[in-house]
Length: 216
Image (cartoon, rainbow, N blue to C red; front, side, top):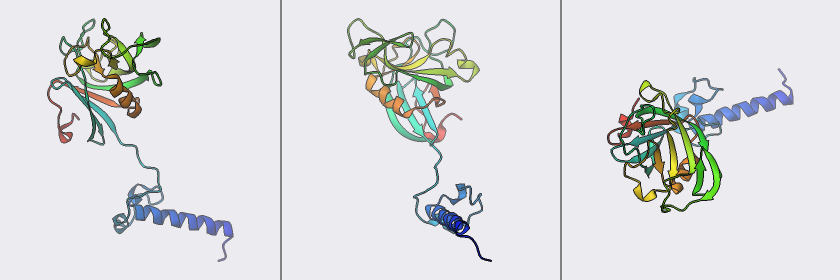
């Protein structure tokens, strides 16, 4: 049966896309194949014309090591020095404790601000502070607002627990904060270029777990 030129063009495009998906090894995810592709097609190239799923982002913070590690699909990506609370861990109202457990990023504040921009009430004041400025122990540069997802950290947002830049960079790797997780300005700028709202944050009391032992 004779087919019109338009139908032939669409058929050719579909066939080409299926071939490219097969050669790319992404056929199991391709909507055209619907999971029914020949297994031998996945033996070819890793280049893919189809939209790829974004990697799963995760932040893990160790209170014992005063260290943060970012993960993509359970693979370690970047390590940062941090400071947690000088008073210990917990989620009691009107305390200065760092909560433990599974939280998530709800908001990124300060995008585009210069390094050292002073933030009060989550608003920039226009003042710029250098690291370790005498007389200042301030929130600067960026804020990641956190929401607790478990009973043991349910008050985290109400208590204004953040990941934020600090002027007291010389105190990083030491538990000296008032409950939040502090970072150097350069580091939190780098982190905020990567992180997205909804990113999971796990704060653990002990050492950083290996990737295969991350909290479920």
